[in-house]
Length: 166
Image (tube, rainbow, N blue to C red):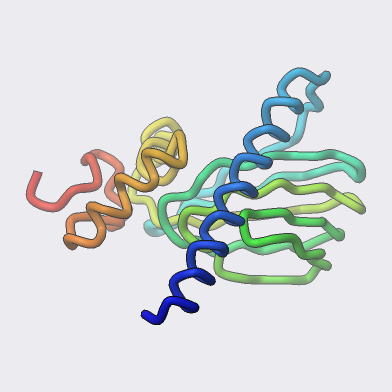
Protein backbone atom coordinates (compact mmCIF):
# COMPACT_ATOMS: atom_id res chain seq x y z
CA UNK A 1 0.00 0.00 0.00
CA UNK A 2 1.09 3.53 -0.65
CA UNK A 3 1.50 6.03 2.19
CA UNK A 4 -1.71 7.75 1.09
CA UNK A 5 -3.62 4.46 1.03
CA UNK A 6 -2.27 3.53 4.48
CA UNK A 7 -3.29 6.91 5.90
CA UNK A 8 -6.78 6.58 4.41
CA UNK A 9 -7.10 3.01 5.78
CA UNK A 10 -5.98 4.23 9.22
CA UNK A 11 -8.49 7.12 9.18
CA UNK A 12 -11.25 4.76 8.09
CA UNK A 13 -10.37 2.27 10.84
CA UNK A 14 -10.23 5.06 13.44
CA UNK A 15 -13.68 6.28 12.34
CA UNK A 16 -15.04 2.75 12.59
CA UNK A 17 -13.61 2.32 16.12
CA UNK A 18 -15.10 5.68 17.20
CA UNK A 19 -18.52 4.64 15.88
CA UNK A 20 -18.27 1.29 17.66
CA UNK A 21 -17.57 3.18 20.91
CA UNK A 22 -20.52 5.49 20.26
CA UNK A 23 -22.80 2.50 19.71
CA UNK A 24 -21.63 0.98 23.01
CA UNK A 25 -22.33 4.33 24.74
CA UNK A 26 -25.83 4.45 23.22
CA UNK A 27 -26.41 0.90 24.47
CA UNK A 28 -25.23 1.81 28.00
CA UNK A 29 -27.54 4.85 28.04
CA UNK A 30 -30.49 2.77 26.80
CA UNK A 31 -29.96 0.21 29.57
CA UNK A 32 -30.48 2.99 32.14
CA UNK A 33 -33.85 3.93 30.64
CA UNK A 34 -37.22 2.28 31.17
CA UNK A 35 -37.27 -0.81 28.96
CA UNK A 36 -40.03 -1.54 26.45
CA UNK A 37 -41.20 -5.13 26.05
CA UNK A 38 -40.63 -6.01 22.42
CA UNK A 39 -42.37 -9.09 21.08
CA UNK A 40 -39.84 -11.60 19.73
CA UNK A 41 -40.79 -14.83 18.00
CA UNK A 42 -38.47 -17.73 17.18
CA UNK A 43 -38.87 -20.10 14.22
CA UNK A 44 -36.88 -23.25 13.36
CA UNK A 45 -36.89 -25.27 10.13
CA UNK A 46 -34.35 -27.48 8.33
CA UNK A 47 -31.19 -25.94 9.75
CA UNK A 48 -32.50 -22.38 9.76
CA UNK A 49 -33.29 -20.26 12.81
CA UNK A 50 -35.32 -17.06 12.39
CA UNK A 51 -35.66 -14.40 15.09
CA UNK A 52 -38.50 -11.97 14.41
CA UNK A 53 -38.89 -8.71 16.35
CA UNK A 54 -41.91 -6.44 16.40
CA UNK A 55 -40.66 -2.90 17.08
CA UNK A 56 -43.30 -0.26 17.87
CA UNK A 57 -42.75 3.17 16.32
CA UNK A 58 -40.38 5.30 18.40
CA UNK A 59 -38.55 2.35 19.98
CA UNK A 60 -34.75 2.40 19.98
CA UNK A 61 -33.18 -1.06 20.05
CA UNK A 62 -29.49 -1.99 20.18
CA UNK A 63 -28.61 -5.36 18.70
CA UNK A 64 -25.77 -7.73 19.39
CA UNK A 65 -22.53 -8.31 17.51
CA UNK A 66 -23.05 -11.05 14.93
CA UNK A 67 -20.08 -13.34 14.30
CA UNK A 68 -21.32 -14.46 10.90
CA UNK A 69 -23.23 -13.04 7.95
CA UNK A 70 -27.00 -13.47 8.18
CA UNK A 71 -30.05 -12.60 6.18
CA UNK A 72 -32.25 -9.76 7.41
CA UNK A 73 -35.80 -9.04 6.28
CA UNK A 74 -37.76 -5.93 7.13
CA UNK A 75 -41.28 -7.02 6.24
CA UNK A 76 -43.16 -4.04 7.67
CA UNK A 77 -42.36 -0.46 8.59
CA UNK A 78 -39.51 1.99 8.34
CA UNK A 79 -36.40 1.84 10.51
CA UNK A 80 -33.26 3.96 10.82
CA UNK A 81 -30.22 1.69 11.18
CA UNK A 82 -26.90 2.90 12.56
CA UNK A 83 -23.74 0.78 12.46
CA UNK A 84 -20.01 1.44 12.63
CA UNK A 85 -20.20 2.18 8.89
CA UNK A 86 -22.80 4.96 9.23
CA UNK A 87 -26.57 4.97 8.97
CA UNK A 88 -29.34 4.12 6.55
CA UNK A 89 -33.11 4.24 6.49
CA UNK A 90 -34.72 0.95 5.48
CA UNK A 91 -38.29 0.82 4.25
CA UNK A 92 -40.21 -2.45 4.01
CA UNK A 93 -40.20 -4.62 2.10
CA UNK A 94 -36.44 -5.04 2.23
CA UNK A 95 -34.11 -8.04 2.32
CA UNK A 96 -30.34 -7.82 2.71
CA UNK A 97 -27.29 -9.67 3.95
CA UNK A 98 -26.21 -8.52 7.39
CA UNK A 99 -22.43 -8.36 7.58
CA UNK A 100 -20.46 -10.26 10.17
CA UNK A 101 -19.10 -8.11 13.00
CA UNK A 102 -21.95 -5.63 12.93
CA UNK A 103 -23.81 -4.24 15.94
CA UNK A 104 -26.87 -2.21 14.95
CA UNK A 105 -28.82 0.57 16.59
CA UNK A 106 -32.39 0.52 15.28
CA UNK A 107 -34.87 3.37 15.60
CA UNK A 108 -38.33 2.32 14.45
CA UNK A 109 -39.78 5.28 12.55
CA UNK A 110 -42.98 3.25 12.02
CA UNK A 111 -44.17 -0.03 13.56
CA UNK A 112 -41.57 -2.45 12.17
CA UNK A 113 -41.15 -6.19 11.79
CA UNK A 114 -37.46 -7.21 11.51
CA UNK A 115 -36.44 -10.85 11.02
CA UNK A 116 -32.89 -12.20 11.12
CA UNK A 117 -32.09 -15.66 9.73
CA UNK A 118 -29.16 -17.79 10.94
CA UNK A 119 -27.96 -21.31 10.25
CA UNK A 120 -28.64 -23.61 13.20
CA UNK A 121 -29.29 -27.29 13.64
CA UNK A 122 -30.07 -26.59 17.29
CA UNK A 123 -33.22 -25.12 18.82
CA UNK A 124 -31.63 -24.15 22.16
CA UNK A 125 -31.63 -20.33 22.13
CA UNK A 126 -28.72 -20.08 24.58
CA UNK A 127 -26.53 -22.33 22.40
CA UNK A 128 -27.57 -20.44 19.26
CA UNK A 129 -26.59 -17.13 20.86
CA UNK A 130 -23.24 -18.50 22.06
CA UNK A 131 -22.52 -19.71 18.52
CA UNK A 132 -23.67 -16.63 16.57
CA UNK A 133 -23.08 -13.69 18.93
CA UNK A 134 -19.79 -12.14 20.08
CA UNK A 135 -20.14 -10.63 23.57
CA UNK A 136 -17.68 -7.84 22.68
CA UNK A 137 -15.76 -6.32 19.82
CA UNK A 138 -12.57 -7.72 21.40
CA UNK A 139 -13.88 -11.30 21.17
CA UNK A 140 -14.91 -10.59 17.59
CA UNK A 141 -11.36 -9.48 16.74
CA UNK A 142 -10.03 -12.76 18.20
CA UNK A 143 -12.55 -14.70 16.12
CA UNK A 144 -11.48 -12.85 12.98
CA UNK A 145 -7.85 -13.80 13.70
CA UNK A 146 -8.93 -17.46 13.96
CA UNK A 147 -10.85 -17.07 10.70
CA UNK A 148 -7.69 -15.91 8.90
CA UNK A 149 -6.27 -19.33 9.74
CA UNK A 150 -9.37 -21.17 8.43
CA UNK A 151 -10.46 -22.34 11.86
CA UNK A 152 -13.96 -20.86 12.15
CA UNK A 153 -16.87 -23.20 11.55
CA UNK A 154 -20.35 -21.81 10.87
CA UNK A 155 -22.00 -25.13 10.07
CA UNK A 156 -24.92 -24.25 12.30
CA UNK A 157 -23.81 -26.89 14.81
CA UNK A 158 -24.07 -24.97 18.07
CA UNK A 159 -22.67 -27.80 20.18
CA UNK A 160 -19.03 -27.01 19.36
CA UNK A 161 -16.84 -24.04 20.12
CA UNK A 162 -16.68 -22.84 16.48
CA UNK A 163 -13.27 -24.33 15.77
CA UNK A 164 -12.70 -27.18 13.34
CA UNK A 165 -10.98 -30.20 14.73
CA UNK A 166 -11.94 -29.60 18.36
